[in-house]
Length: 172
Image (tube, rainbow, N blue to C red):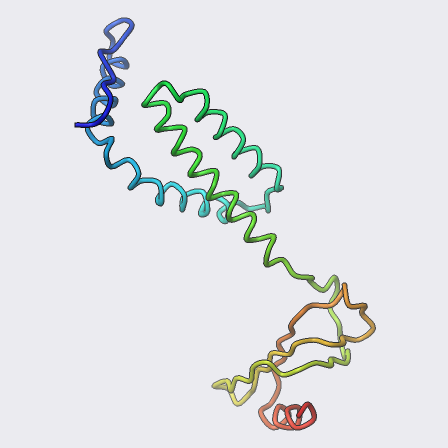
């Protein structure tokens, strides 16, 4: 069915070689559908990235990609090995894409809590909450005494609904 034959099991005829030969034959029969597993393995790399307790360094993603490319090059003449190396490349690509996306959306975070700080900006969103309060999303222009590189891009502020109406009037 597929394009390659894994051949007979080599080595001594033990249980491990029998299992490996059976596994290789099964893979050979399904070789025309291997690509269907790639999105699942790619998503597995993304899930693994976000399941980690600590934020991994970008070097980890680069190292995984380089190792996967090396495995693909090393196993290019061994069909089963190439299949596993390709799956590892898909996994490493998912991990690297998750890391890249994390870096792209990174924004400044306040180093300490600001109490009674003046906030200046544009109202981007206005939401009425169930508890009689309003939540405003502000595009920050000024935030206390912070320099532009220290302040966040947006701020959410919750307040009583009457105060929010006055805040909207001042910005208009």
